[in-house]
Image (tube, rainbow, N blue to C red):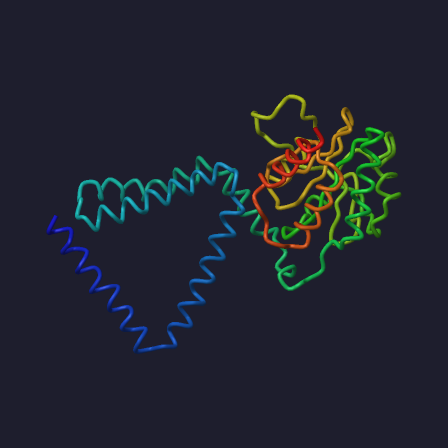
Length: 293
């Protein structure tokens, strides 16, 4: 026990105290420290949001635990344990690349598809445009006209847009409804919306590989989930079988939304305000249903 206390004391004096003495001697380093911390926190938050809900998230947790255990074993002079953990860390890199190759590739694709220009571009989908989209969605829901509408956010969807037919038109309720009329050339596929424009229609989305989904989810819903697993886009789905409207975000799907909640959520998220947990939407829907009863 005395050895551990002594080790902590030495570590504190040689690292913590000396570091703060250096900051006191060179105040300019405080500015660089704050900048450094801000960049690191931003990158960590960005990576976590990108891999949230995927197997890579579990991998990240495992890596953090391994790093902490390795550092503690060295600090406490647990030589045998430290040797084992260090060896695992060395060869673990190769194992991670082999086992999680699909997740790592997807993460790198996401990094490359993020449009840096959007960091400096304040243009978003305006409220009037959202109102028109939502109005068309519930018109189609009444007639059970299947629809798949994608809102681009931070990550560039150019690779998805290239699979469809370019439109480059202003958002119009009538045009959206006309696109999804059954047996028309553009109805089969997704409509992509960027800012306040209809960019392309009949776009092909990646289908999710998840096996835990309910069998009642058709191709549209699985395509919406697949896209939201790889990109930060928001997807609205109108079921052709039931006429129910669903919202898909980050690989999660919320079904049976009413017009008021859908409109509110789209406006909140597309205006780039701070996002809350997906549970908030579910709670709102439950509250509304219970109040009607």
